[in-house]
Image 1 (cartoon, rainbow, N blue to C red):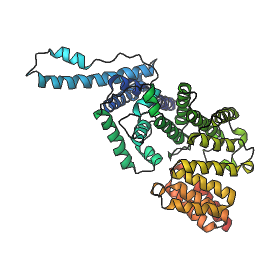
Image 2 (cartoon, rainbow, N blue to C red; image 1 turned 60 degrees about the vertical axis):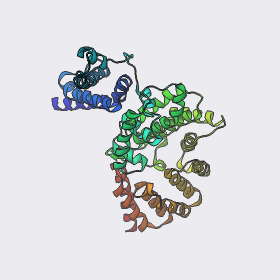
Image 3 (tube, helix red, strand yellow; image 1 turned 45 degrees about the vertical axis):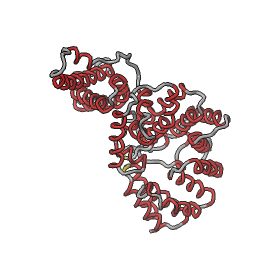
Image 4 (cartoon, one colour; image 1 turned 30 degrees about the vertical axis):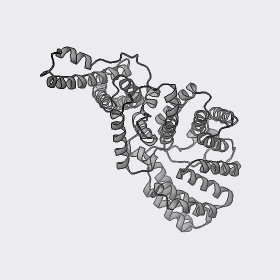
Length: 423
């Protein structure tokens, strides 16, 4: 029993550390404005917490404890650096050493608060390209690994690691301070911020790797932060659209897995388990924003989600409307996943042969080369078309390419079922 209790305590500490990580980093970055040094200091504070708290218990205010330790770490770094520079300058300077060091270690004295949203906007820095800003923010705010971020961008892990490293260096060498932007600049960074929140939610809703299909800590945090942005900008259609999309998608979460964590596809889910309150809020949001004129990609995706959620049965889904919405999205975006979803909708309206034909354009798209979803969708189309042998082969190929255990098990189960039916 004590061992189990200790294990539960450690698991609770780890969950708490993941939850407060962006908040603590936001406080430290706002004070010291050196992203790499701040990230290192916060990491040291978390290592200290992981070693100390299981033995001595968690402090009354864990976030304040972590912030204080991280501040002490970075102050020590500043003092050490100041002392080094001072030794070099003393040959030609008469300024007292203590005065120099105290000045170098000074902070802005800002009041602590939940800085996650501020950190989100700070990381989407003017010196960075949108892709680099989004990658860095996913690392700092979302806590995603480099591998997970690379999967979201459909690029190799090494490429993403270099991109994140260059982003930190670009901020450090730029003449734009790492600080909370004013209203005008915040508006300029909004597109990147929304894309970050979208990707954090997606990773939480369908984890790219590991034993669990979903990471509710990520999806819940994405929804919380998007609500905060919506509160700041209540008249922005795309902010409302993104919040609606998250709510309408997350509403299905209770029905997506079985008792053993196995994946249950949309067509087989018990729709009575869907969160009707979230659906009602999401539908109201997307209905209101679509009526305002200008329509963006998040609003259209939310509209697709609403069509799915409003169907009482899978057979009642209005696929022609979904196909039309994805047609609009394709004209707005060069995203291969949009093209893939357009092919799925086309197959549901015009038959599997139409879907298979549309997949040919994606075969030459390097961003999807080797991606398991392309093989999984092709396998499904082939199954619908009656080409069982080819469907089995593509289900197995897709299973070998995914790093998500629930997705892999689902794909292998589909292949095995088809194999049994063939005899």
